Length: 189
Image 1 (cartoon, rainbow, N blue to C red):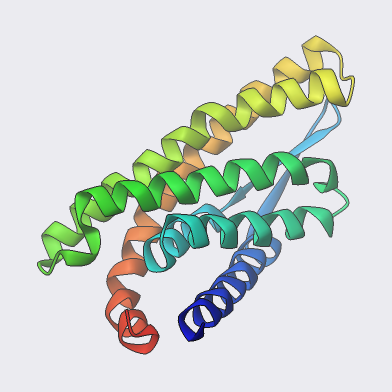
Image 2: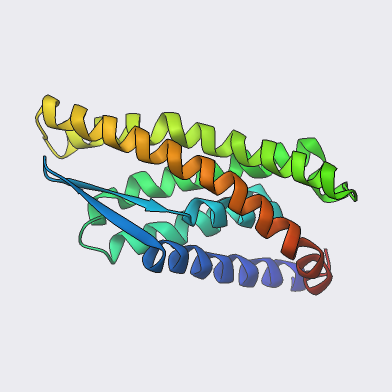
């Protein structure tokens, strides 16, 4: 019971960190066809959460934190369901890949860096593909946006998502290198 309570507490803390990373660490880009996209590094915190908490709890921390950020921001409120699914998948894929690569067992900085970067890339590549596609389908068929406008948003979103992914691979890897020893010591993992 104590371990479960500790994991839920850490999951809630990382959900808050994810929320803060998106809410206060983004640059909104308005698009002329009535949409917005943002340059942000919150996905780096989703990936970091999955490495420190594991794929399920880390994915949930990212999904809850970033969905809550969407719900509380009028520009993104309609994206909250999509965000929940995509951020959970980023965390789960990054965390599972890290487990398979033995990220936690690595002791050499070079080995840690390679495993972290590869597992971050796995989760974020998923997002580069599926965020624009699911966004297009959501805008087109749920929100009723005309096909041309949804296509323009798809193009913008794909470019911004790819840029965010590249930046987040580096940031999440650097954060893990800086924090993992202290976190595992504090958490008892």
